[in-house]
Amino acid sequence: MKHFDSELSRRLAAIRKQNLFRELRRVDSPQSPRIQAGGKTVLNFSSNDYLGLANHPVLREAAIKAVENYGAGTGASRLICGSLKPFHELEEALADFKRTQAALSFSTGYATAIGTICALLDRDDVIILDKLVHACIVDAARLSGAKLRVFRHNDLNDLEDKLKWANSLTKAAIGKRKAQILVITESIFSMDGVAAPLKEMVGLKNKFGAWLMVDEAHATGILGHCGRGLADEFGVGDQIEVQMGTLGKALGAGGGYICGSRLLIEFLVNRARSFIFSTAPVPAAAAAALAGIQIVQSSEGDDRRSQLRSRIAEFHSHSTKQTRQTPGAIIPVVLGNEVEALNAAEQLAGRGIFVPAIRYPTVARGKARLRLTLTASHSSSDVGALVQALDEIVNHKS
Ligand SMILES: *Cc1c(COP(=O)(O)O)cnc(C)c1O
Image 1: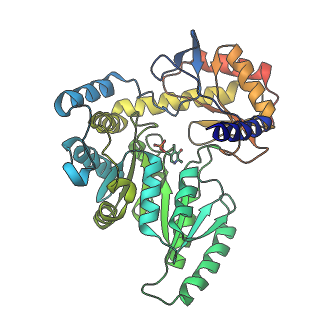
Image 2: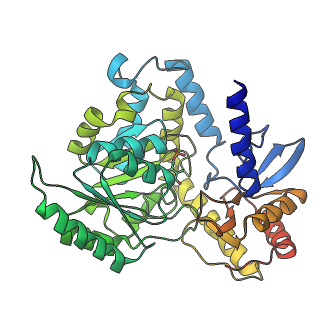
Image 3: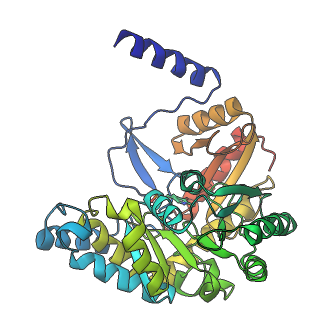
């Protein structure tokens, strides 16, 4: 035990020394524009609850009803002890929402990526990733054992080069089945807020006979008709083999999903290990997510999206500094140095404003930043307070 403790202390000291130490910040209230933390009320610009649904009365009520009807827990994996109705209702609604044949929900977005990518590809295959994809996709790609290549962020020429390389490799492969290429990107990137060129990527993957997986975690609920996502906005939803998303961001609940063909979903039920070997999420999560999807597609969803767009426009019009305009609700303020980002976050906290400092390994070393997220529930004066505090504190470069 003594050796264990001293080894961990040594490792933690190294993390601290690099200004990369993290700790949990306790919050005593629901997610909303104002949260209770450390005995104070703070203005919250840290959450991915873009439409303000996480504490919406309709989602709360749906979760409570699900507990009353189906209990708190699920007992086992859905393949073992039966698959509760709220999951089927959720998956039908997801497939309808995304205009696909079928959908499958997972306990988290992380588990979705791990289960799906490892089910579809193995060591004989090739995975090609955008440089900035989420850690869960990187981890899944590594775990799959497939040959891994990374293309420069949103760089179609570099993607094409990697596809050419992979194509020569897969053609040459001799074995039980032809090697497969999977290209993976996010539609709106989680830490930069920029969009992927999905139309062009669809063209490229078709040219090389590759498959495409798109993670819409930060576009679902916000972009496209009724909030269906960026693939819908670009009109390419039906050409993406694997459409992934999460239920814990704009949809206000928690979990992850894959939408696609009926065969894809049948295959995942048989082969996605994070689905098969994991207890089903609590029924309350599925019921809340279903209520979230219904609101997102309603006129209230339209209203909330337009409020969100107004708040973002206000931020950009009032900010005296040049901040890159992004299509979603993520506004990165890149500071570079880790200490600078931590100091800025601390000074904002001192003024009662909660914005996280994002550091390595969430972003590259030397690309530390404040990651601001606006939501439909913020008021104009909330945004005004944020802009003023940023103007006073931060001398940023993006
Ligand atoms: C949040 C996120 C995930 C993980 O989803 P969880 O439900 O939080 O596990 C996956 N991909 C992207 C792009 C994300 O931002």
